[in-house]
Length: 128
View 1 (cartoon, rainbow, N blue to C red):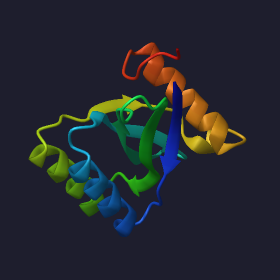
View 2: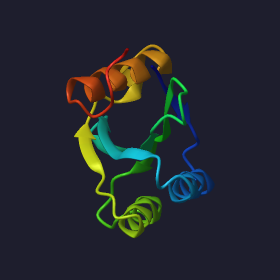
View 3: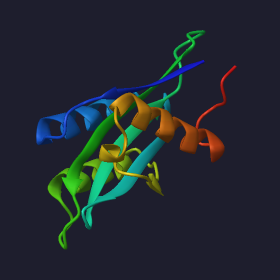
């Protein structure tokens, strides 16, 4: 099974697009994720939704808005929009601390690392 991250952007429009993808594919949602990472003593959130494959397709997409939401004292609007959407869909996000993507030379290596973390924790299906 091919497991691939599909990166949306970091802005408001991208988060709302991810929320709408979740609403339209509510029956396909495998898990929703809230990744936290640190860079230079600042914390950032990434939000993601993993969808089950369609029919007999061998493709497991994970849509992500990567590290675009800085942690602050007040809950950021983009994060609250994502959480509200998940509450509406009755889905609890899985929160995982990960390394910041700047730790890796290439974003593909970062996504391979995240896929490894998710597989080790049995949060996405193993390769077949």
